[in-house]
Amino acid sequence: MDEVALPLHGGCFCGGVRYRVAGAPLMAHVCHCHLCQKRSGSAFSVMVLVRTEDLTVEGALRTSRRTTGRGREVDDSACPDCGAYLLACAPSAAEYTTLRAGTLDDASWVNPIAQVWVESAIPWAVIPGVQHADPEKFDYYALGEAWRAGAPAFR
Image (spheres, rainbow, N blue to C red):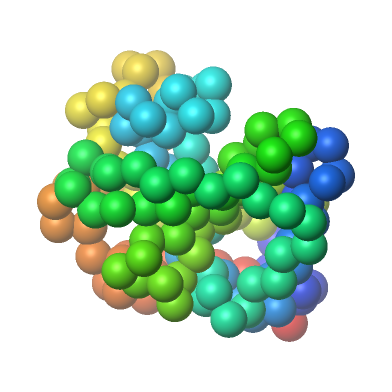
């Protein structure tokens, strides 16, 4: 896919929460940590990083704070009715929000640049050809630049 139309749209399973992203995403990556496995009910989570200022959410969210494996606090937000986790934001980096790619109406363009917490991965779920990134040295800026270099044009 060479071009993706903005804004991007997404929402929860029941439709009680909808969101809109007006600007181009900054990066996509995969997380294999046990918490993502539990929250998603799957082998991993696919995340899309966006600027918080580009995100508009309609509907109520239930937000809970957790501490990551790196000791960082993150606020996870879900639909209070269907329980679908939609987004996460670290208070220490409130200018950025991570969306769960599966909540996008069209995620066909999402191609992760890296996968983290690979040591926690279910062995068959490690994605061939996607680099392993050390969660202790995860460089959002460098990975984001590399991702954007190969990402579709967002217009």
